[in-house]
Length: 73
Image (tube, rainbow, N blue to C red; front, side):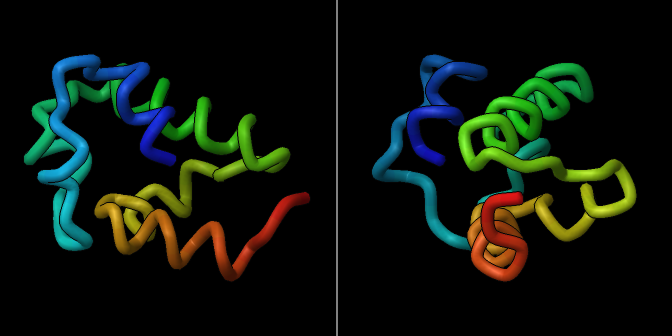
């Protein structure tokens, strides 16, 4: 997931990515950047993250938990 995050906002310092970091607000991603990030992560994991699940993946912890519970599809 860290590699995907660095692809969208390349100036993010990974050591600052605590679990409660809000992907859009704290990383200052606009809606298109957030969609791109979700798309990269989903593709990397071999699955899909439907739009209805975006609130569940709004934070680093949320994304990790979502991916762990949904696994690769």
